[in-house]
Length: 139
Image 1: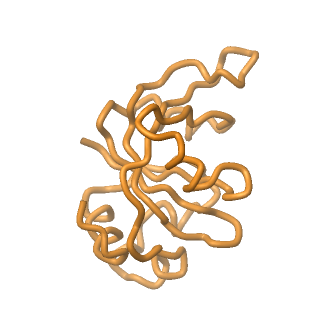
Image 2: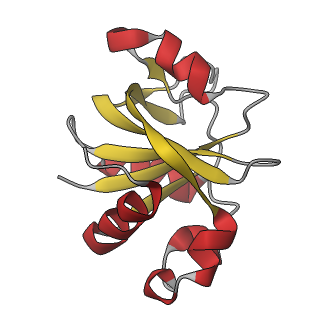
C-alpha cells in the first residue's frame, strides 16, 4: 500500500462534500499538473491519502481511500488528463496544520512542507505514521 496527500480548496471541494459522497466516492478531477497526474497514475485501489484543506485552513482534515485507479478525467475534453476516485474513510480528530508539518523536524523532507503547491503528493510510510500521530488518528 502507498500513501498520498490530496489537496483541495474547501470552497471548491471540502471534506464535508467528500464525506457526503459516501461509499461511491468521487472523481479527483480537474488536476492539470503533469507531476500530479503521474502520481495518480501510480495509485492502486486501497491506497490511502490525507485530505488536505488548502488556502485558509492549510491542514490535513481526514483520510481517504483510492477506490478506482487512474482513468480519463471526465472534466477534460482533450483526453490527456487522468484522475482517480476516492472515498472518505475518517476525519482527523485534530487537524494537522502546514505550520505543524514545517515545525516538525521529522517531517523536514515531506513534500507538503517543501512544495505545498502540488495538488497530489506522495507520502512516505514514516510521514504517514507521524502525521497520523500528530492528528490523533489511529485508523
